[in-house]
Length: 82
Image (tube, rainbow, N blue to C red; front, side):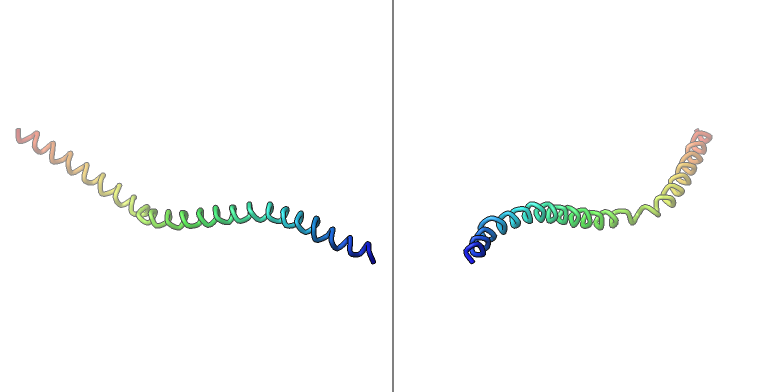
């Protein structure tokens, strides 16, 4: 019966604190990784909002090409007048 009490005291004073220490060493990085993942998700969602105009870039490129042609035609017309 005495050995039983010694085993219980040893369990309470040695084994449980060691297990809690190891658990803390495992859980701390897990929570840091979760915080980083949440941050990445938040910024990724914000980034997609800035990409809404990308499909319109082709139309903008087409319109600037047409404007460049018109400026060239205007310059050549002015050259003929002078």
